[in-house]
Length: 368
Image 1: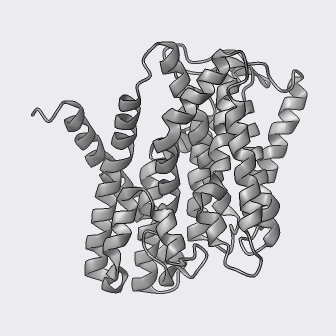
Image 2: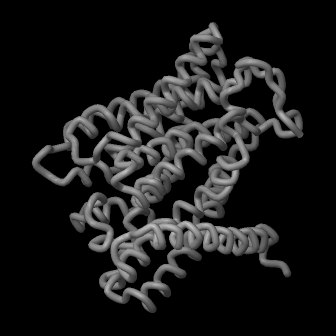
Image 3: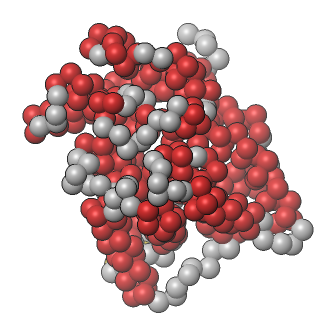
């Protein structure tokens, strides 16, 4: 099945998958490229950490769309929602954490000091707060960090999913009273942005602001805000396709500039660039997902689609691999970078296969 388009106006869309949203796959693929680039080439891509905000925006956007569609069909269930999230998160997470611990035991036993409580925080969904309590810095030298330092992101996602049914039902209650239910997400986002500015101190390591659920949830809520409008208010921001094209290209350029030039040590990054990146990303999502235009189809190319398909597992495995190669082979060279990339692909495919088998087994109720 192909998507045909002429100029910048989309002429067709997939007809066999009503849940498909154009552009989302490509944007998620772009997000994982940004994050891996930041960890693998920190000097070349100092702003690649902004990719996490794109992940957050997409998660909020897709979570609200999925929930709204199920609610419309009278299929939204809190229990089912939690079951789906548990199946999505834990099989791959258990595999990767176990594989990482075994690898550290064999290659870098010093990384296992105090690993017990860290693993508990990972599976308990509070790793970001554990890292804050431990004064862990996301921006320290990789050899001085933990192979699981990147899982603060997953903890925020898990906490968001935990409270999501309450937020979603509250938004729906407001909507059914004739008001704009999506404003609840916008309000939380504004409060979160204010918190990120208040808690940031130029004299201290920024990890408290970077890790905090209260200071990062704005990106998820901004995504949820636009997702709600995608379902209930489909009017585009701009009617002129030329203006849309200029805006989308501008957002891509701003993203590239952010990845290449923004530094995590700058105060303005926390006062402005991180919140601004969430706004830029959500506007990209809004435009790319609009089936009237072709930009989302451009993003959904085979390379970014593959990265999207494996983005979660790639996120889990990439940092432990970089960490282990760094502590066992020293400073990253072209050779070790190539080895890292090959290992990322191989381990990702391996984990994905076993994850599929495990999920299939669980969904069948454990019947052989």
